[in-house]
Each structure stands twice: as C-alpha cells, then as structure tokens.
Length: 244
Image 1 (spheres, rainbow, N blue to C red):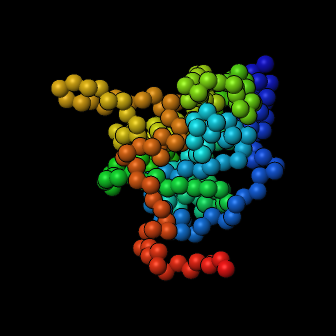
Image 2: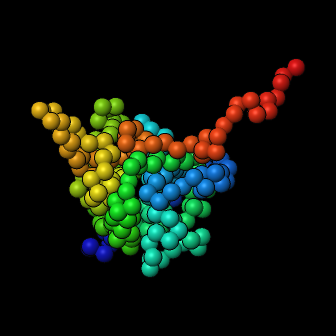
Image 3: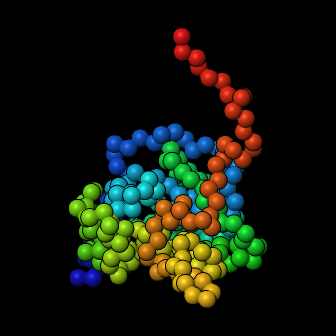
C-alpha cells in the first residue's frame, strides 16, 4: 500500500511540476542576469507549470519558484547538472537538487540579494543548502498534493496565502519556499519576521513552511538587483523609433 501511494504521489508530482505544453518561453535568459549573480543571491522565477499557476493565484504574485545561487563550485563533491550547476532548488518530484542556469531559460527572473552577509555567514548559508542536496520528499500524502489540482481553487482572498501552509506533509515543504527560508534562518538572517513590541522590539521567526517566493521580493532586507542598471544607465543613449 505504501509503495502504491508513493508511486501515485510521484506521478502526480511530476504531472504538477511539468511545464504546460502550450507554454512558450519568452526569450533566452539575458546574459546580464548571469553576470550579476553572486553566491547567496535568491533567484525568483515566474514558472509555467500547473502548480506554478496555483501558487501565483494563491499568493497574488507573479513569482512561483525560488532558487538559491551557490556559485558553480559552491557544492563541491555533489552531482552537478551538465552546465556546471550553480543553483539549489527544491523540486516536488526530484527533491532538493543542483541545477544549471539553463533550467530557467526563457522565464521572467528577479534577483534578490541579502545585504551585509559576511564571509562566514555566506559559507554557513551555502553549507546548509548544500547539505540538503539529495533529500527526497515523501509524496505518499496524496491529499496534500491533490489541493493543487485545481488551477484556480475557490478560496476567499484573505485565506489564499494560508492555504499553502495547510497540511503537514512533505509536498507542502517542497512547494513552498521552505528550503531557502530554513537556510537563511539558520544564520539568523531576516526575511519577513514577526515584530514583538516591548521595551525592546524583538523579532520572531515565522514557520519556514509559511514562506512563499514573493516574501523575498517584499522583504526590506533583500535588495532587488536589476542587471541593466548595474553598469550605469543613461537614458539619453537610447535610440527611439519616432512615429511619423
């Protein structure tokens, strides 16, 4: 029975994670994004899979996936993709894995950079994420997965975000930004902590399963990096088509 549930869960996970057949990538990834990346950067992705549609609807955000850039040699000794690796992500069917830059070709991307990380913090952050590579999620919790079968689930707006945190199974941890949130919380770096007011304002960690990709975009402690502006920008150098 357990093996049958696992096979069914794996098949459902693959189906949910598979890009929709009618999706066409916008364009190849701008090399400027690759040039701007630094180890520790969080890459937000606007995905096209079936489950991405649900996540974007529930979180009211364009971002459906998140990956951590560890550098092409960031996880020495781990299996790498054919293009050198560089990113750690949690995949519903395949588990925690290292992927290359080609994994995100054609998708809208955003770089969110933590500010003020020292070398030791960065090494601990990457070591935490690399230590999870190879972890596989238990997909026998079919009920946890079945919630994502509806492309636009009929959930009232105030409850949509909380729906992602419902359920105690591993599928929830894979779908949400749990892995990346746990990595930053391991070095006590804030994402969107809860403020506890008193004589001294204290910060309290949120449960890692409650984080979504958009939280890194909203966090005041992550800088949004725009590749086109990094090398300087002068609007006077642009060539405009003048209509006649």
